[in-house]
Image (cartoon, rainbow, N blue to C red; front, side, top):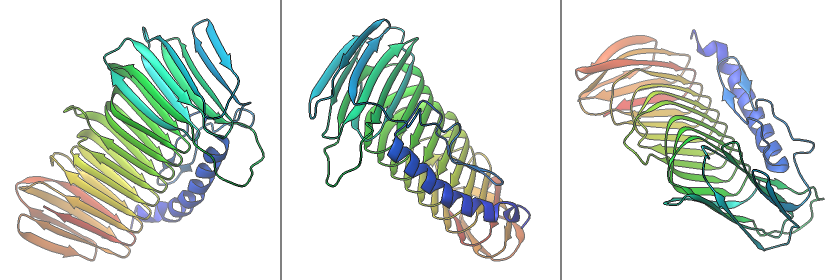
Length: 354
C-alpha cells in the first residue's frame, strides 16, 4: 500500500475533527469575506484558509444598502420587508454570504438588481453593496445571548440580469439558497450547513461542504475545465457536468456525480461516492480508506486496472466480462475503449460496471 499508508491516519482523523470545527465556527459566527475552504489531501488537511471572524464575525443588527457613493441604512425590525433596486451596469462578480437566510436567486431579462430582504425574528445584520463591478450580499448574526425557543428565518429574493458572470461566490452558514440558472466562468460554493440547490454552468467549480445538502444541475451543454469537491459530511449531488479534470475529496457522507467525463480522482475516508460516466475518455484514480465507490461506465468501455489493498476488494463487470480482485494485481477487462483505473484500498469496496 504505497500511497494509503501516507494518508490513512491523517486523512481520517483530521477530516473528522476539521468538519466539527468548520461547521461549528461558521454556523455560530456567520460568514466573512475570507476564503472558507476545506482541503482534504493525502498529507494535509486545512479546514479554512485565512479563517477570520472580523471581530466576532458578527455585527450590530441593521440593514444597509449601498451603490457607489449612495448609502441607505435602516434600523432592524422583525419580520419586515426591505426592498432595494439599483443598476446592474458593470457588475461582473456576485458574492453572497448568508448566516441563516432562505434565499431565492432569480436570473431574468433585466438590467437592474432587485433585492427583497425580509427579516425574521432573530436580530441580523444585512448589507447589499455594489462597487467596482462586484455585488456583495452579506448577512451576519447579531451579537446576542442565546435564549430558549425558536425563531423565524429571514428571506431573500435576489433578481439579477441573466448573463455570464466572471465569478459567483456563495457562502452559506445555514438556511438555504436556490437558483434555477446561474452561469459564470468561476463558481465557488462554501457550505457549512443548510441546503444549496443550483442550476448552474461554469468553467471552474469549487465546492466545499462541511454538512448539509448540495445539489447542482448543469444548465448548459458545455464541458467544464476543472471541478474540485471537498466534503466533510453531508450530501452532494451533481448532474450533467462533463469536465476535463474532476477531484473529489470525501471525509464522510455521500457524493454522487452523474453524466461526467474526463480525468477523475477521488480520495475517500469514509462514506460513499457514486460516479456515473457519460463519456469514458480519461483515467480514474480511487483512493479508499473505508466505505464504497461505485462506478458506472458506458457500454463498450474497458479498463487497465492497477489494484492495491490492505483490506477490502474491487469487482469489475464490463461488457459481460467479470473479475473480483481481493489482492494486489493488474488486469485488463471490458471493451475496446480502454483507459486506466487505479484503485488503492485500505478497507471497503470498489465496484466497476456498465
